[in-house]
Length: 268
Ligand SMILES: NC(=O)c1ccc[n+]([C@@H]2O[C@H](COP(=O)([O-])OP(=O)(O)OC[C@H]3O[C@@H](n4cnc5c(N)ncnc54)[C@H](O)[C@@H]3O)[C@@H](O)[C@H]2O)c1
Image (tube, rainbow, N blue to C red; front, top):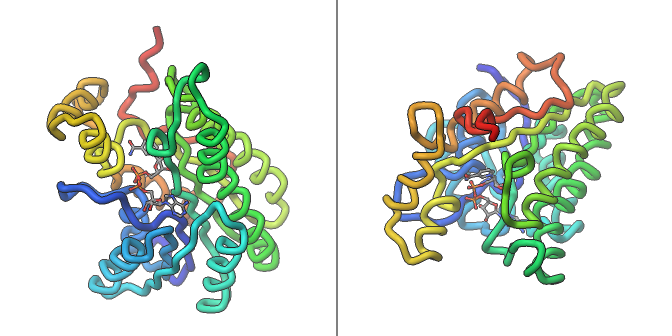
């Protein structure tokens, strides 16, 4: 087991609803970490969704609890971190998965509103700062810890909406800052850049919002992927996170890892 007896707190451990069996990134990573021996605190704004993730883990014989927190509120993030320490006495892995885009009102720079920009900054970026602010002191005391955050290839590619771009880019820079500032404490920080993944949020929710069949939206996304012409899924992201969270990556910090089927290689 690659995370034997480690303790993980996962923000955004539920998933957006969808008709298909597709799994969200936060649920997949929670389940995979548990399969590899981790005790998992599943945190989400939707307690029922976090609870569903925790019960999948428990049904498989793993150990998990669910906690409700809206990551825009510092006190709720802190309470979730405190709950993890209270439950298991330590935090080995912090996984920052929460992220929203168009559903938060994102838009091109000429159309963005103050409310939408501020909301997306708060949900995607400020949340990461809060989670790190309250987890790093715990990890410093332990002299160990792994932080894995979920950015997006939107940070590097030509991407239309301004707030998602800004937050996902800043997550990479902050990861580098947290990595160098905490290296002396044995804390590693790395960030994953998923490309186009087949998750309920990215496919079902968009198909619904655009009034188009799910298969059309999925086929359009598949066609953009060099590697076998097929989107990735949440398990691809989860396996990358598992590696970065495990001791196998003990000499890796400050890295930004694309998980995108080669799409980022298409330049020009
Ligand atoms: N799916 C993709 O194609 C793709 C591509 C690149 C990056 N990503 C990133 O992966 C992450 C997860 O994406 P997903 O497709 O699995 O989406 P998802 O919506 O299924 O998962 C995100 C979870 O975060 C929770 N959440 C949202 N706002 C919250 C808040 N304020 N407080 C607490 N929890 C909150 C949601 O309830 C949900 O359970 C996001 O950060 C997203 O930007 C996804």
